[in-house]
Amino acid sequence: MNTEAAIEGILFAMGRPVDRCALAAALEIPEEEVCAAAARLAEACARDDRGLQVITLGDSYQLCTKKECYEPLIRLAARPKKPVLTNVLLETLAIIAYKQPVTKLEIAKIRGVSSDHAVNKLIEYELVCEVGRLEAPGRPILLGTTEEFLRRFCLSSTEDLPELTAEKLAELEEEAERESAETAEQVDVTV
Image (cartoon, rainbow, N blue to C red; front, side):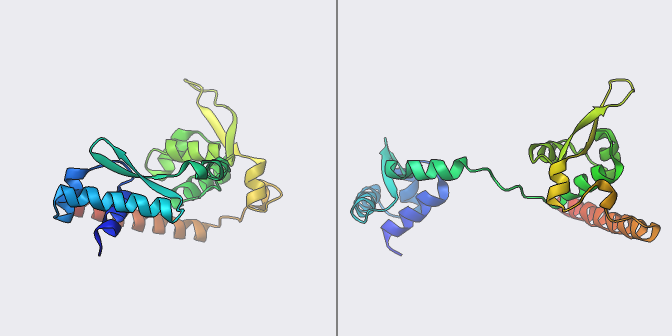
């Protein structure tokens, strides 16, 4: 691999300024060769009308987006992100959907771990909202699903949720116990 390509790959992967000395050590070449290769890479980026440029910051180099690309980049970055529902989010959402109105503490008891992050993400995705407060010390927030939840899952109401039979519930509990045991084994191995 040529030196310019190696520098370009390193700068892209690092995403931050990389010191000339560190590049020389990584490539096992003198710093003067790094300087010459970085200059050739910068020239190639400018000559080939690429969307990237190599900038020099003191004794470091960084691969950056050219100013001409800022406007379309900003338009793309400003688009709303499509929510990704991970297994944790789906599990938390299912608990809320079936147990609503429910508190974060009740969700944590069912899942066996804190669910604050998952609940906050579901609120951000507008799938869950505050539906009231429990008449108990501290008046914890009660959570429920939203109209957006119904739309996304093609439901007319929460009454359209699939029924949880005793068999299905037992099957889900066994699966949860199995996953919990596997997770515990993985933790024991990594510790």
